[in-house]
Image (tube, rainbow, N blue to C red; front, side, top):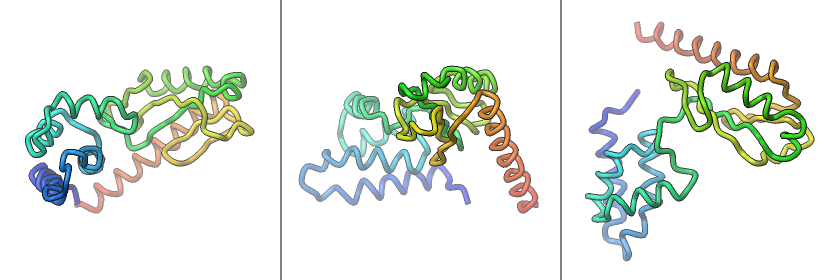
Length: 174
């Protein structure tokens, strides 16, 4: 069951309160940002403002930390995070064609999320699966020996599965 905004704020405040009596309270900022992202899915500006107030840290400092570390997301992330490998082996074997096919199929650019919040497109420099080049990773699953056509088929299967899952949820709620 989805948490309400008030419940999410209360959960984050409780987490922050767990560090209040510790020495160098402000040094727990990264842990707090990780928790905030876990709760909200990404780091919203108003959430960072709340953290700033709760921890007595300037919002500009929090923003600096959140933008420095690539782990933190400042925009909503899709259910399926697509990482296209553009490392040397993958690039030589056609990763750019795969990337262009994904962008065309989903209608988004690098770093963007589809309007239905189903897919987020990212690049990576190496997924460590050079023998399967070119590769892409969707969430934690590696897809190798790709062509543009194979990649589009894979995306359509993920979309179909998500639609079936949504239909099942809707059916259960009736």
